[in-house]
Amino acid sequence: MPDQSVQPMPRDNHILNFLDAEAAINDGELFEERDDIMEHELAASDRKVKKEIRHLEAEVSKWQVLVDKVRMHRITTML
Image (cartoon, rainbow, N blue to C red; front, side):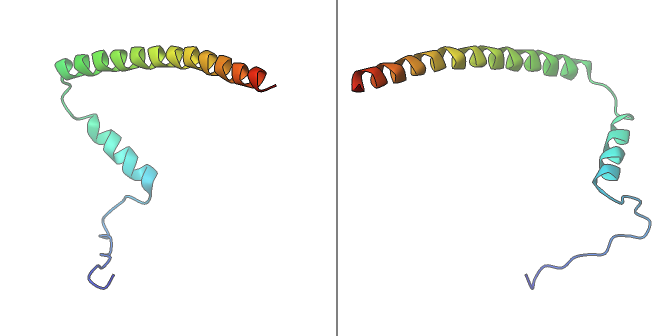
């Protein structure tokens, strides 16, 4: 678009590609102070979400059995 322009990268920028940028971000996280309360909350949330996923996966297989039974019933009644 005419109103947009690409600015050249500064010469002192050492980020060459996505992996370099990701490494720089990850290295920056090493210097951040750990928040134990937040880590605990995130771990608890992660466990809860994984439990819900396992529950839903079990539900899917139960529903699939029901769908298969209905399909077979329809096929047998059509013959």
